[in-house]
Image (tube, rainbow, N blue to C red):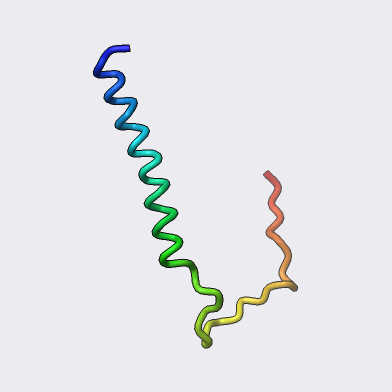
Length: 55
């Protein structure tokens, strides 16, 4: 391998694993809320079945 190929390999590894590490740290500091605020529309559709299409 040439020096340029090794440099690009190291750069790509840093970008991929660095992005993974940043994503994990971001999600640990700002997780999704356990429950949402009241007042939303209840979209209860148990009585409606999936659309059937002949394709």
